[in-house]
Image (spheres, rainbow over the protein chains, first blue to last red):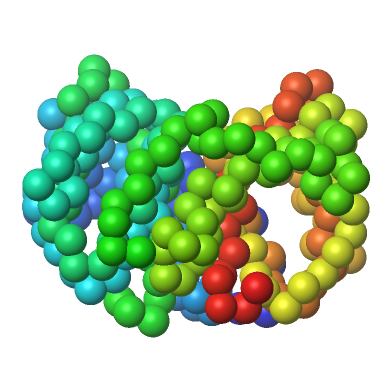
Length: 115
Length: 115
């Protein structure tokens, strides 16, 4: 945590599959051991792929890098694309589905202390 | 902090200039009032622009979206481009310079509690 880290996301091996889901890959870019407060992950979702509805007591801060996702937060749906920043509060059910034709890619940060 | 937020970065007005620096624009995408633990900013640096060396007791977690930057962290220099994730530890002097031909764009998150 007292050392800088510089890494290209494509040089980090993906964790795959995520919970049996072969259309989603996650890479952890800034890990628990790297930084004191929060960690940075990147997700790739293949066309038609989804992360089903789930909830947890920590928030997400997300930035979409590529593609088109339908994002459900609570009972509302949003279409998000490259350049959208998203805050999902703690404990709110959320789900993601890639509704575009290409791979969707987004950063998703989470706090360390509440994991 | 209990409400979702969805915003496209280009819809957020830039704070400009940053400390008298007309080649750097910052937009705050996820603000202190939005989220409990950390905030998300996006920086644009025009060609030749720089953020001079500075240090502070909080870390950065950065992701480069576009362009080419020379990043100095402590006494080491790094060239970073689209797709690089960067962790800068607390209290380490750092500076940024756009050495590319286009605008450089990067996300830079910081913790709330240590600001």
